[in-house]
Each structure stands twice: as structure tokens, then as C-alpha cells.
Length: 294
Image 1 (cartoon, rainbow, N blue to C red):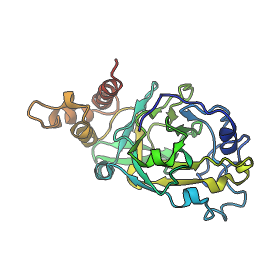
Image 2: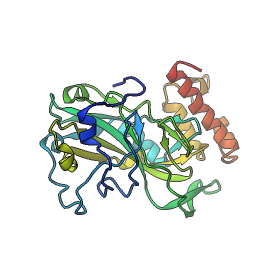
Image 3: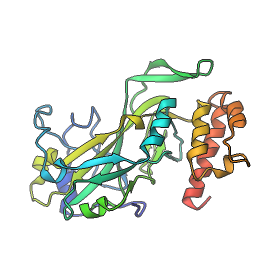
């Protein structure tokens, strides 16, 4: 499900769901509430919650209480997870592969919903890659967390029937390490682990719906989608799997149809600067093909 690159909500529904100032939330993790008065495809905000620490979490509106979400390409995600998934972050922003895609059921067909994603740190640590053991090691405490943002699916808001009829894809989402990013990309710290989260928000038409906003959303996460944010691929097996499984990476495969085991191995083993170059070129070429432009 795709749509325009950016959409800004207007009118009462926007103000009811994401009214500011928002309540600092325990529901969605210990995230800093940001000013979200404009709602482009990505924006800075915190979803509201009950003020008593979560005792009312089980009381969900029927429009979201029965919603179920299934991760698409879960087998591929598991393959990456077994190796230790890595995602490239750049100053300009880089798309994810695998792309986060889900199938949704249990929505009310005529009700309107907003779909969002955010990323939370898995722990409070910073990592480094040990090439001699092909493993990630703790390098110290996590860096200061960048501004908290959420990415709105560009088709939001839409009726439940529309969301449920086909796969929902977040293929326009980009990751960046630029703290001054003004393009709405998701800001992450390199060498830190993150857990993507998916949120379903019911657009409640009631005039005072913001008073019960904690009832109108549900959140989902899939452990196999966790990843390490990197500026260059560290594990050459991740590079190989991305080349082998990404349909837009045909130009990086050998003529006999095999992945570039030898070339990828020799380049990525040199470290973040040398090895990551191969990985970054892979994702960069992929992104250009997906965008249909240079």
C-alpha cells in the first residue's frame, strides 16, 4: 500500500488523536514528548496514555482491541536475525531492507485508522564489531538518544477495509544519523540496537476523544525485526544475504547467479570504512533503482 510522499492532517481528527501538549507515555516506552503540531509522513510526538502508569492498558476501544498484525517476509527476517541484522543509516537517509511490511485483520471496515512506526533502543549500550570472532561486543554506554520521532504511513488516515485488503508496506521510511535532519527521517545512533514498533490508531470522531486517547491505539512489535544501526556493514554474511535476497540488487550478483561471497568477504572484513563501502553501495544502488531516479 503506497501513497504520496508526505501528507499533513487537517481538521478535528488530527487534533483529537494527537492533541498537544501530549502526555509523556509509559505505553510506548520512555520516549521524550516532542512538538507534533504538523503531521507529515514522519513527525515528532508521543502517543498519549493513561496517567496511572498503565493499569488501564487492557481497556481498549473495540475498534483496536481485536486488531491482529502478521509480519510479512517473516522467514527472511528470521534469517537476518540469526546473523544479527544490520541497517545502514546515512546523513541523507537510507531505506530499510527487508522492508517492514504487515498484514492486518480485525479492523472495523468503515472506521478510520492511522498507522505509524517508531524505533526504540533495545538496551542502553553502544556496540562494536569484533571481526576476529564475527560478533558484536559491548563498547560502552549508549550515546545520548536522538530526538524521538514517529513515521506515519502515507496513506493515513484510511478506512479499515482499505488497510486490510492488501499488504501494508513502509517502503518510504528512511533511517538517518543526522541529528539536524529536517526531512522527517527516523534518527538513529550508529552502533546501537533498535526494535521497530508498529502502532494502529483509531480515528475517533467523538468531540472529546483525546480524553480517552489511550483506548484508541494498539502497538505491535516483532523481535525478529531488531537490528543494529550501522554506517557500513560489519558482518560480510549480512552483505551476502542482502545481495542474495534483495530483488533490486541483481547488479551485485555474479553472472552464475551466486552471491558475491569472495568479493563481499574481502571488502567487508576490512572494517567499517572499507568493508561497509560494499554494503553502502549495495543499498545505495538499491535505493536508486527503487526510486526510479539517480
